[in-house]
Image (tube, rainbow, N blue to C red):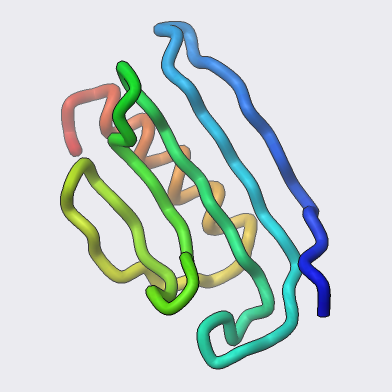
Length: 95
């Protein structure tokens, strides 16, 4: 199955930081058992400070600065909620 882009948002918050959200529908594979590929990033001064993705061969995971940890994918809506929640936590200095 060819990847089909289902969401692509790029914007800037009040501080001028970049928020990018991309989600694709893809074929089910061992690497993407849910059938989605995604990349959500929050960039401050040219540096990714929060990111969620499932790059080839890496599975579902999230980035907090240089730290990487597994992420339990539960659907696209929950993915976006978790991402925006982490962005807010970063802004509040809690991440």
